[in-house]
Image (tube, rainbow, N blue to C red; front, side, top):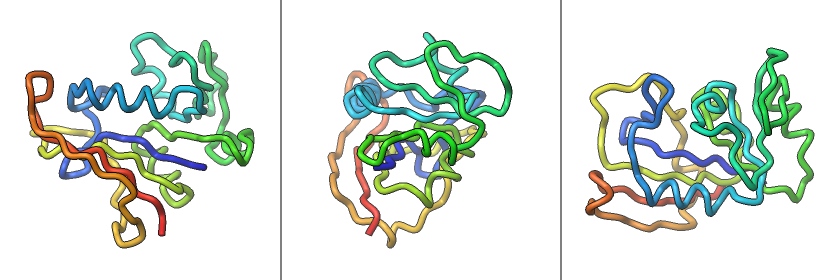
Length: 161
């Protein structure tokens, strides 16, 4: 199954200068819970943004045409090649960035989104527009701001109809 996982603002913004827009500890916990033990596929810039490199307890796959080494990760020149290396029963999570999300969206079975109820003043990376009529909500959990989260947000999983 091909899953896409992302935290998106109301305007679909996902990042600025190679960093996430929001610090949401609950979102980071959810990301870890969903992706641990599975394959994660990301672009080179996303891999470079990881503070400690490859994420533990996951098969890390980086999309890059360069011959650069990505310690702890496998490299494939294309999303097609990366997906071909996965078994049919393997849970695959696409974790970014924007161009990888755009390429993977037509192939995805599920979107695991954290929809942040905010529009950032500045952003340079955006999640692709998608037709919500093509998806049904399979899971929804609403969260209000608290001592660790400045914005309200929803965990929402969409399954392709």
